[in-house]
Length: 155
Image 1 (cartoon, rainbow, N blue to C red):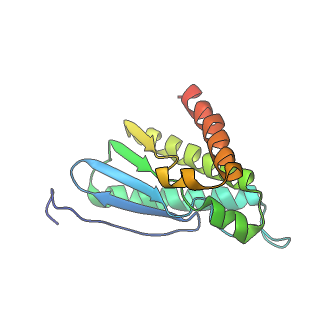
Image 2: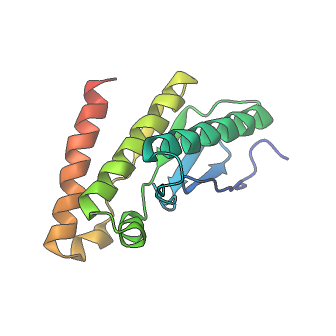
Image 3: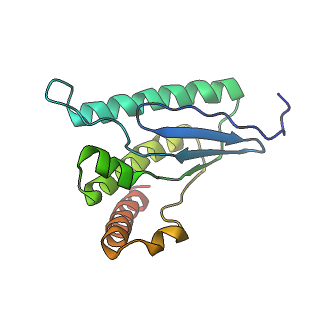
């Protein structure tokens, strides 16, 4: 594969993350449905355990992907998406769905910083979303403000 050619490598795992890579020194991690994994049932493991297992699998896959590239991206971009779909599919409150997405972004950001990524960019809200009703906008923006302030405070 030519070093500077544009190409995309995509995969999905339990957490709903899709990984995209465009050559030229920057990696991009976009989320097609952050937190879009099945909620734990009575017989299944706890929700926390499910999240940690999904993220462990994601970290393992990302590590293998980075080793295949023989490089570590210096800039990673995440686009959390799918909070409303997750909320509807699981019966979760929309604010809770945004909190789950925020937690996933925080965990994945920590992982990328631990493998020497220099910059992690998170695109929190698109202009198209400002046409949604006030409750949805407020839920998204409140959780984003709360969550990403926490991330910045802990860097």
